[in-house]
Length: 222
Image (cartoon, rainbow, N blue to C red):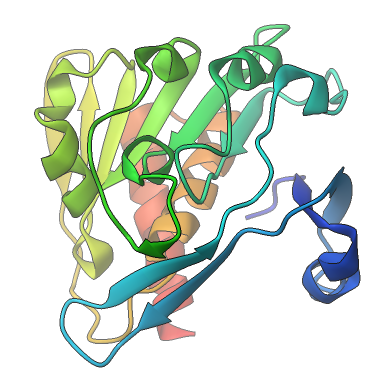
């Protein structure tokens, strides 16, 4: 992507090396935020669509847990596993200094309970107060309702290997791609990385979403 990035990850001290070292070896700077618990999930592919269980919940990020970021960081992508992972105050702290916040929509709809994954729309509206871009899967968008009515400037609905839809300034644009017949796990995360990276380089939302779709395609065929 030719974009400088940093990863801030939180888990229990016992799991630190196992989780962070493989990522650090890829060359991206990883910073550890001390925690007591590690978020863990399990995905099963024995039926369609895939099923997911939350095995354990991670620590709750509050404003005091947010590390001091470099002033040159203009975009931050927040990737919760469940709705309990980040408080509104934590997102407000991340947005301090004019930073733009991208949020993965699973942090709105995934109920914070161990066991079979349950989605609902019982989230605190304050979570969206400082969000610039919200990425949703098709399933998450169905739970939340009309994406165009969400109080977020940029809403992006991903369709797995089939592209994405961009909601921005009252316009709705569908980006269609050639469907890739492969396991789409990780496509949403790759899209977010591609989108935030492109937006941080000055691309407007639609162009950034097209770039993100290319990143997803590259990942799926690799």
